[in-house]
Image (cartoon, rainbow, N blue to C red):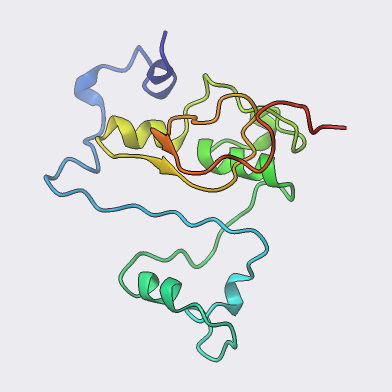
Length: 153
């Protein structure tokens, strides 16, 4: 069994699978920006009178899809990030605190995107314990925490 067995159940005939959203010759670029301690309503793309200057984010937003509302599944960083990349609740993942590892057998959106032919690159912190890629082909920066429980008290 590989990780895609979890993505596509074995009992689903290929002919009934939904068509790929990326089946066209030119696939859209996907850039997901996830930042800590950012109050979205104060960004200029949501509030033109905001004193916060974010010209590059504004330029990206002007030609992109912008989500105006979101739900964070956990007030803690690692469970929230694990939930985001897997589309599962922290309780389903057993992610109770920032020292909760994300299993290598749990598919992430990076696995789905790679299956569709996308190049997947991760930059910045994710609080991954152990496995540092989780479907991403490349990681540009190391995590700010050790890749084990050495920092956990």
